[in-house]
Length: 172
Image 1 (spheres, one colour):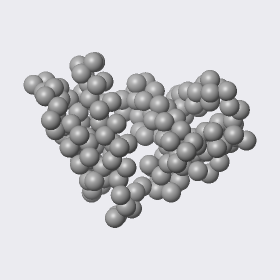
Image 2 (cartoon, rainbow, N blue to C red; image 1 turned 90 degrees about the vertical axis):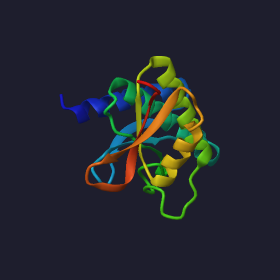
Image 3 (cartoon, rainbow, N blue to C red; image 1 turned 180 degrees about the vertical axis):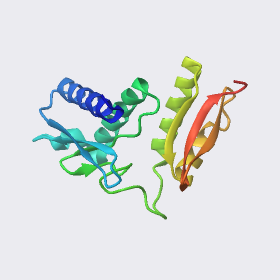
């Protein structure tokens, strides 16, 4: 079984179970983004409940799915989730944030703080992203005063601008 098939299978299983536990009937399927990466799709008569106010429920669902996928294999890429054609815009449907658009600072501050807690608890570095310079700045600034962790940016070969962030224990 190839890595993509196992990623798709795990994503399908995890997302199906999350939706079932929410008590919402939905058809879970997978698709491809323009760059051939995996995306998960949900079709439901209760799309509004899955999306939530300003897309907050969908963002949470997407984040939880991707945490499950990263726990299974740290190398798994970010898998966006779409509900009846609506996506968070994080990576997928409407594409990445465009130049000049504001970064959702609160979202990236929460991601930074949650990831730092995981690094401290499990004593293992964490790789996030890839992110734009503005998104990375929010994460770096959020954790700059944390006495236990430090952040570094890591380039992606062949791609300019977007980089990963590594969060690790100081002195490790």
